[in-house]
Image (cartoon, rainbow, N blue to C red; front, side):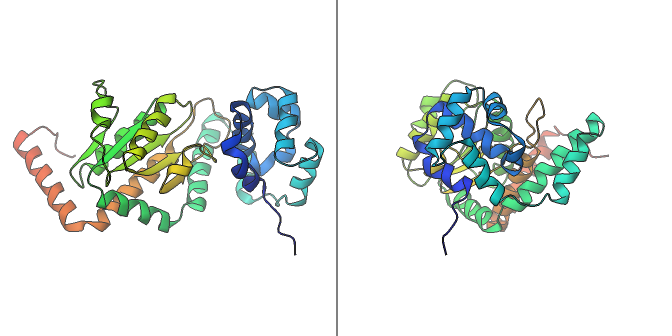
Length: 283
């Protein structure tokens, strides 16, 4: 029996060799993977910000004779609409607030369906066993990086935010060694600096835990643990509710691997807060 190669597998096989234009198309195609039959070649080109000719060449590079052959391939394997998909369609007719909340709920549901406990445990073990943990994220990724560093630093020592604002990126990168772990946030719109930092850290011997909103990330080949949190819907601003939930759970899983040490550290931190009297009492 002939094994059918999925669209995702085709793109993954070619992604490293794709041009910047083709990667834009690949990201758009994967972002709309569940309802690609609803889009024409012209519409996909517009979503990616490329020409229709570029779109035609892209599908030929994936092994299709033309866009019609691609549509036929998708039609043969198209799944029936799920209840979740119908809810999303109904959301388009709902109020803007209801639609916004529905898209966030859909993002969390997609995370639940794609995330495996084995992958979380693998990343948690890396974070526990690391000599030092370095966290990095630029632009929209900075928020997630800051949150990850804030949680992990409560559980263990030597958790550092690489791009912490002092401009000492080079000095900090020079300290990375074998046995360290880099937790990187790879979100659009991407800066060239992130790939440079990941390259330097990996060449120094650090393991990479990557959190990305791209279904196929150029950095994925370097990662020992990879988490994909693609945005849902067509909101003006990307939502990171799934990413924040993932980081929170990853920190909880890390705590489970070093309960005594983490609890002792958390208790020591609370004692210092009490001495400083810097926190308002809970209501």
